[in-house]
Image (cartoon, rainbow, N blue to C red; front, side):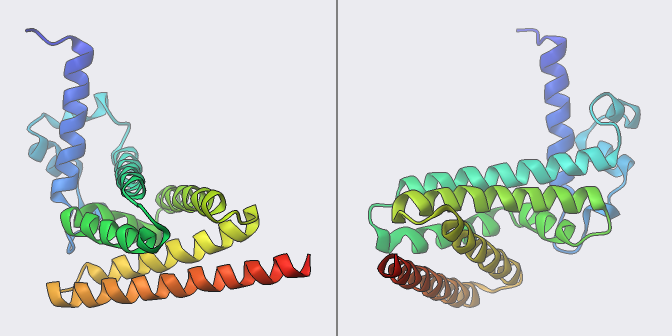
Length: 206
């Protein structure tokens, strides 16, 4: 079956994105990639690149968006598997670490560009982090019946802690990763219990 021009264009665009992800590693930042290198990896002519992206920055922003979406979708599926409140944190952290293990280049991109020299990249990663915070805050608010602001503060603390743990996980050996995962779970439980205690105090006051 002959593919339409639109279908072929989407396939080529996908090839470019996948090629850029493959070239990323713990030792290579996105800024070190060249257009010719990416197109060679994708198996297309350099000039064809501009039919799909304005420049390398637009491609990079697409990678950031796709990485964030992939991780958020995975975390949503993890929350759907949760049966009781005691498993929320463990399943979430283990799913997060599993993502880092399976897609280290994606997470490394988010981490590196979070503090990179490009303002556009920093804003894109910040936006992705905010998406995580908003989704988690909404989950906490409905599950714990917390006020909106309290749920957001707890969600922000949790997201920052988990992302920092993820940064450490990139360089961990299997045994170290297990210890790091357990430590993150304990720290998140401290945050959750502290938030619950504070919520109970506020309810008594009011």
